[in-house]
Length: 280
Ligand SMILES: Cc1ncc(C[n+]2csc(CCOP(=O)(O)OP(=O)(O)O)c2C)c(N)n1
Ligand SMILES: [Mg+2]
Image 1: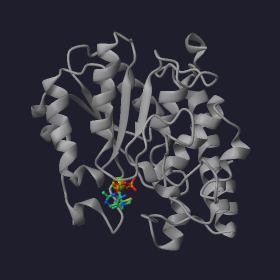
Image 2 (image 1 turned 90 degrees about the vertical axis):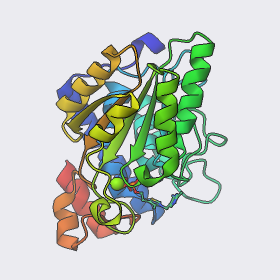
Image 3 (image 1 turned 180 degrees about the vertical axis):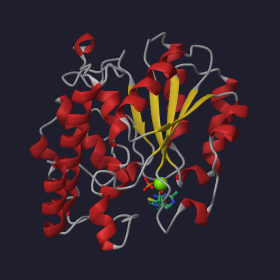
Image 4 (image 1 turned 45 degrees about the vertical axis):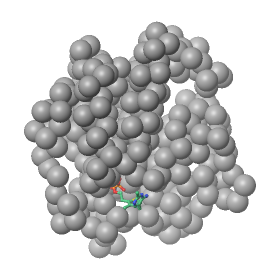
């Protein structure tokens, strides 16, 4: 149960991350649609949360009241969440291979009404941090020890609602809330610096009253250290600006394809085979 939640070493986490990357590739290629590159950038953070001893959860009792919560605000990257949850024992890896198939609860965006363990239905970008604030307030009112983690995309940061949420979290001094920006440098139609450059994030978010850190989010060691630091902050919400690469793990292939954003495209069967070779 909760106390036995995995606490893998950095080396073991790296190996788990590799397995999760393989699931992501298989799932999206099998579906013939989805967002592998958006999922791949976030793997180290999601892996650390689920297996680095940070999140408490019980896959046999997904609604355990004292559990920690993870909200994937960039809901289109849900293959990374399905893969991690499958590895954690919420359901089988085989089941996740029904991704985006008619009738499958493994929808293209997380749906909390269809799949136990999903904490929020997301996909309409901009809403996850607000949902996380509601949950952080709720567990605090109930005097639960739960911590709420929210992952936001860097393109998603262009949504005004996120900035309203940043101000609100400070107002309520939500020390049980940690947000992570997956700063992979791209959004749907191009690089975030071309579309709307909001970097650097830390110097904008710190004045909102948040504890902030900026890290290499594809370095497992840095992710684990940042989550440890976040846990030690007890008087305000914490933000981790996680600088990543979209498609991390299979970038040489995306470079060959001439598209390092590769947004919303599954790999062809041939390319997926090469990707899996690269990851093994
Ligand atoms: C409100 C809203 N507007 C537009 C979209 C379409 N959309 C899906 S993914 C995406 C890009 C998101 O970029 P980012 O947040 O950086 O995530 P990444 O894919 O880079 O991880 C957009 C615009 C959406 N899902 N929701
Ligand atoms: Mg992005």
